[in-house]
Amino acid sequence: MGSDRAYPAHPIVGVSVLVFNDGKILVVRRGRDPRKGRWSLPGGVVELGETVRDAARREIREECHIEIEIERVLDVLDRIFKDPDGRVQYHYVLVVVLARYKSGELRADSDIEATEWADVHDLARYDLPDEQQQLIAHVRAPLYSSEEAKILAQRERTNARRAQRIRLVLERVGQAQSLLDIGCGSGEYLRAAAQHGIPRLVGIDDSPERLQQAQAACPQAELHLARADRLPFADQSFYVVLAAQVLHEIALFGHPSDLEKALSEIRRVLKPEGRLIALDHLDPGPERVRVRLPQRVRAQLDYFTQRYRVRKITFEECPDGTLWLSRRDLQDFVTKIWAFGTAIEDLEMRETHCPFDREQIEALLSKARLTLREWLTFEEISEDLAEHRIELMEGTSWPRKFLLVAQAL
Image: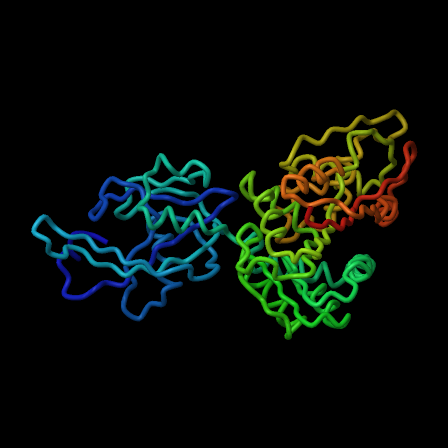
């Protein structure tokens, strides 16, 4: 977008790309007008015969030398710049697309002076255009890419414990007239709720691919591309809000305040007699246990220790080949083996399956003016250990999931 496009006879169509990479956003410092020497989202002009998506990929490749995966169109912005005499010097119509980093080493080229991965919580120092700041504030990249969404759906379909989780939820739904499924994913809970006879079913997710899966699973459900901390519904809309294994994702991958906001939003959309049903991973604590691992699994533990990013994994090896390690480390390891070598491995290595204990959950509920009515723990870790032929030599098994029911105070 250079000076050769000054004083156009008509608006010029361009593309602006919001690229996410592990909690950071791609920004560039422009080397030509408009906004020469200032930071902005990358992008450029759509060429004749080129689609917007192709233009986005080409511009990022030319300017930044990386490859991206396009998620969706976010917005259309008008960028109009006038000269001192009031004449329109530049007029761009920008189609903003959301994308995530795929591959390549970031470096500036073309008419770009510099490129950076900017932390989403430290964007003030880049002085981005107001409309871009507003857009970023209301957008978070989908947690799952297209390929990750497919792998996760396959995992959910083949997980033998899924039926028990659904049964536990439906037992507590009762004869509710409406249900909102937050992070509805592949739609299995919505489908089960439809078979249970709930008249109004609504689901939200921030992944277009996951919403497509939910639509296929439960065609009668009303689905929305939305976030839990900004629910697009009126106050007191639902008898039941379901959050199945989504609270930990909000806590781990969002802004530190997102989970509190999400719980406040849940309370807002619940009817006075309504209830929140949440199911998630349980923190087993730091207590140590002694285990014996088969040779193959021992090699997988070494691999996990190198790849895991949430915290340092430590263990003590005994002369007889057994290992002492914390319940937390063992739980995270054994529940993530399935992801090794898949497209979702990198995401799993940035996530813990030990996010909450009961005290933490009750404190979060209290801040949102929700009170705990039921607390159930289930799914013994011994089942996971047996699946991988891991022997628990010292210490006892523990439940690795919880289910809660909460209501407004």
